[in-house]
Image (tube, rainbow, N blue to C red; front, side):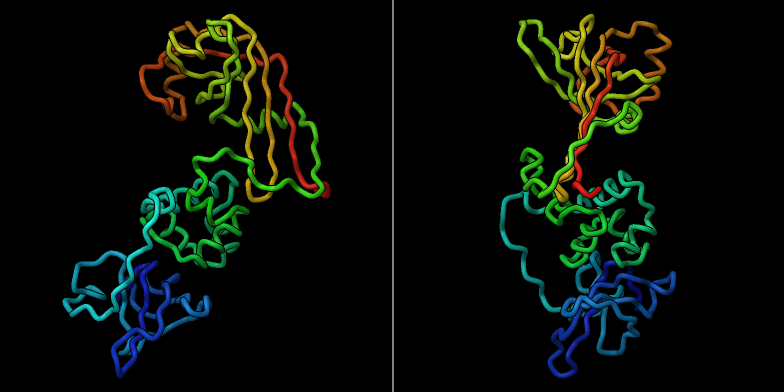
Length: 306
């Protein structure tokens, strides 16, 4: 018998051959996947060390039809019910949950070991969730969401097309100003922010851009005939923020200063080489605009006792 993290261990009834208990394998004790296993049982959500007997078999997440533990045996596992029908936005594509978990873990600067400890699972299983097209159980998602301070819906991608901040406000919120040093830290090295400008038709416009922070200047790529290009030669405002839906907290940073086009060929090459990402909007965007903040301010909302 050989198993991988995320496989199911199925215990059959000796009389009927039907499954009488099953659980998710969340821990391996041998590199070759042989028993024993740490199993989280679906009926109790408890994790126990299991030495499978003759009435047990492995249900792999990915296996050839007609096999259970990798041998050419008849499929004895009971048929699984089809998932309930629903709009595509409610069913995450394989791997999406793991990518969201990994991205949020890195954003919070958590090691995989610390994250696994918080979620009460093995680091190996967490690695499996993050790196493979896994479909964790609801109980596992609850643990992951709790460890990250978010919600199961967020990990599933729910509400992705809705504006952020639709939750209730804190009972005792505290709004405080941020220092310039805190603002620079929150700007980080790159991300997505919004630039507020007066467009060529004289109307105000706010446009999201992928940005980089280089030598305390905020730089972004655009096209010469685009709306953000109208910022060149004017004073503009640049804003970036983050909303914590689960805890009703958040922060915002506002930079104001003159914008100019980068013309030095060496500087352009250095910016292109060092960019963390290409513009999400795609297309030809080879014009670099630099904003050097004259003022840098920010605010943060937390609970009053923090």
